Structures are given as structure tokens and as C-alpha cells.
Image 1 (cartoon, each protein chain N blue to C red):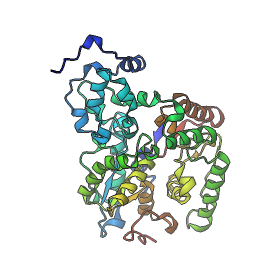
Image 2 (image 1 turned 90 degrees about the vertical axis):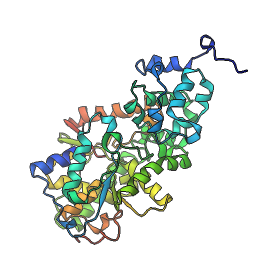
Image 3 (image 1 turned 180 degrees about the vertical axis):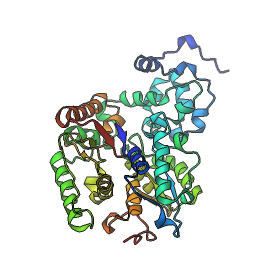
Image 4 (image 1 turned 30 degrees about the vertical axis):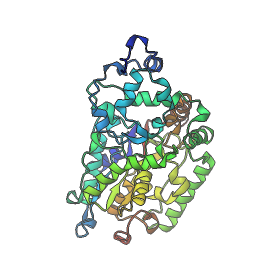
Length: 167
Length: 239
């Protein structure tokens, strides 16, 4: 059992996945990360979340990455885990997510990379609920954008600023 | 004047019940320092927090704990036990509180997702035939319309593939085009991969439901299929 994130990092290091951050050199679009609890704290090591940072910095440029505080194995759960998205307590789930929202807002980043689908759903929901303007994207979207192979049909989660990049 | 609690007279059943299943949960070691509560996003919700629930457990307030819906508000993220100086396994308590509720009375959203998964192979109820149809259809669209990917290969149950990938069912069911970027990366690096038809979805709501039989069944079916039918050495979690 291995995560796709570890493979992305391996393929970049081996030169099989040739990606860089040239597309973002002038745009300077700022990104932050949601560390999913299951691959961070609950995996017992920071290996996967460190690989995640390596991949993201490679594809967006290190200077455009702003980490949340705290982060990695000490990160806050987004509030969508443990079945919360389906548990029938939306008010409490959103109150729980306020900490995550404040963490994201403090980074000033306009994009949140959420490599877990639960986190993705919850962070989008709290963003809408509290009126925040950030966008939530899957990791593969930004890798494919940096590769120059992201089709216009694959840009649902990108904001207007990146909607045309590389097309 | 208030009377002191007489420890010897306390009827503490639930704690012993959980400790029988999780002997190293350390509930008795709580120093009441509150580090768990200080770092828990669910603190104060429904008038509960991790330190309080451990106090209540140790005082035998079983009815009150079992009644509280906080077990469904806590996400079992593990931040409490990671910070706890005595390594008290609060998420294990929450899991067992969930398991103490009759199965049919657990939250219907989680219950429904678990039942769908057992029945169809995905929490959203998409059967393996539907999954196969969708991924092959999206792959065909990419081959036709996305320059440079005319040779893109996507397969289900291809025996002997080096890697078997799971996929969160929200992608094929609600946003199938989101799988494209992943496949393009796999294609570019020349990965030898396939999807499984059996229990193909990456999520497992039976775990959240605290349905031990259910989550184990899902996993065992998946592992059996990968080991015996596909004979693939690697499983790749895509999230």
C-alpha cells in the first residue's frame, strides 16, 4: 500500500515526471495545503506530508507556497473527517471547521490544495458558508496544469485567474 | 452542604467495557491537564470536550456519555491522543461510543453510505458495471479530444498490473472529468496500473459507522480480489 503522493514525489525525483513552476513565475499565485489527518498524524510519520510539500513546491514555486500554522502531523482536522460530512450535524461541523477556515485565511493564499476528497468537500463548504473567496483544488489538477496538459473541461475548481493558463 | 463523591460506590461499566476491547487506552491515567481540549476543534460543541468526556467516563456517568451526540461531532482526528502526555486513546473511546448505539439508530447518512458500499462496492451506490462504463467512457473522450493522449490506457481488472488504484466514488459519480488529470500523470510516467471492479471505491463509511463487520468485509473483499484475481503487488491510495 502506497499513496499516489509518494509516487508523484518519486517520479519527479527520478525525472519521469518532468514538471516545473514556470507557469506561475509571473502570476505568483499563492497556494496552501490541507494536510489530511490520515496521511499525516495518523500515518505515524511526516513522510507523506513532506512528499506532498515537495510536489507542491515543485509545481507552483517554493516562494508561492504558504504553509498553515500548525501543519503536518500537528495540523487541525478540517472537520469533514470521521463521517462528519454525512453525520447530520451540519451546524456543529461548520463550527468545527472555523478553525480550519481561520488557518487558511491567515495564509492569505487564494488556493487550497486538498489531496483528500473529504477535506476537499468540507473546505469548499466552509468557504461558501463563511463567505471566503479561496478556491479548493485537487493536487492532480495543479500537477497537470504545470505539465501543460490540463484540458478546459478539467478546470471546474480553478478560479478565473487560472482558467485560461496554458490553454 | 454538598457531599463528596464516594468512589467505591461508583458504578463504572462503560469504561470497563471499552477497556476490555482497548486494554491500552489508559483512561485511568488522565491528569486532567486539558491539553487534549485546548487543541480540539470539537471542544465546547454540544457542551462537551475531550477532557470532560474522560472525566465523565471515569466517574461512571455512562448514561450521559452514551446519550451525547458528541461522538458524531468529533472526527476522531487523533490530535488529542497525539498531544496527551499519558497517551489516553480518546478516539478509541469515541469509536466504541458509536459502536454502542444500535446499528439502525446511527446517523442515517453514514449508515446509508456504509450499506451502499457493502451492497455495490462504493458509498455512493455506483455498481462495478457503472464504474467500469464511466471510466472507459471518460477515457475514450480524452483519447478523442485531448491532444497528446491518443494512446491513453485506462483499464478495469487488468490482471497482473503492477499497481491497483482505488478511487473516491465522488469522482466517477459526480465529477468524472476530475479523473483525467490523474490518468494523464500516470500515462506520462508510463505507470502500469488498473482499477479493481470489486470494492473499487477508496472511502469506507462503515469505519465511520463503527461497524466492524462491515468495514472488514469491504477490505477483505478488496484484498482478496487484488491478491487472487488481479495478482498485483501494489495498491495505490489516490487520496
